Image 1 (cartoon, rainbow, N blue to C red):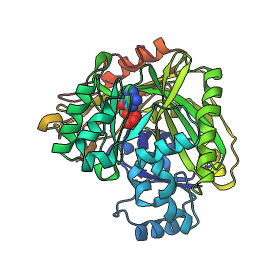
Image 2: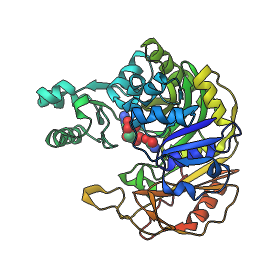
Image 3: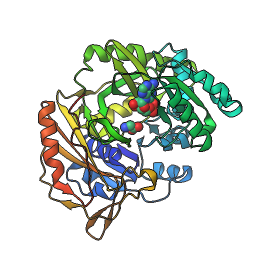
Length: 430
Ligand code: AMP
Ligand code: GLY
């Protein structure tokens, strides 16, 4: 088979590296990919080809035909919002991603709350504020009063900045006033408030087609910039997989309570779901609630879950998308830890400049339990330079969490650059 991976981050590098190991795969095209991907040894490197033309429906049609692509794997959600899965359906090529209509599960938080409610899925109580926010803000403040710890959410894509977790009604009112003064991306699709929940978070990853699915793993992201969950939110500073307390009985319950009702509801709505569905759960003792859906692989969770998947994953995903046949993979009984190294200034809040152009020094000693993944990098001559906020990451996998953490923190020193920073507590507490 020939695969096409869309995107350029660490997640896409991990997909390339993992799918490149599969016997069924001849070539992997990355569009556009990143310059770090060629600094890799092994089968994926030999199968790798970069695509440089600009991304459009017309160019996609040409590439699918010219490169004889069997399966398209979109990385970032923006490809799905543009309609790449609908285009692939038109061109009769399998795509591991939902149609535009089904991608609303992530693109519109109000759509997703509606699906959860219709399907009877446990989630935080919510009220739509869209009309009051636009026409009568005092009314919106009134609604907030019935929430102990209001969490305000912008419905549309807000570049990761659309969730305001507040400790009191007063904080909620202040947040609403601030959003009113500085309208932000995604607000035209609506705004709502939901009850604040407490507990531990876990992300569950499934490849789905209709009501068939393959479980790909459980992971925990580390979204805050600093150790012990302090500092501002980021795209994700590291991940661990699996999560020890998310045992088999927890996973079975999650499938019954969250996954299957969602897949059935999407089918009933006339928007059946194909692709990766990642559930973000908040778990407090015996009580679990669904916080959100994402309709694609997570970054950086993917870098932690993929090394633990055994079997011909590419073939399993292809057969699932094509024939609804969910089989062909198993999960290793090991723990994987992924640490991100970020550039000086990341995440670039309050106008802080994210530093670029630093030379990445490499002293990599290859071993069979480690893989480096590049993200924000570019090539200049023979050098690899930093070129983004999250620059690179390392994943190690070992028999247990302590070994995986120790190994990862040793290996991360093998790639370095001026101004680098990373969290020291990835996987320390689940
Ligand atoms: P979301 O994009 O909906 O996942 O929200 C981003 C983050 O905000 C989540 O990972 C949680 O840490 C937090 N969050 C979202 N909804 C709630 C909630 N109802 N209660 C507490 N925290 C929340
Ligand atoms: N790691 C969270 C995300 O990919 O959205």
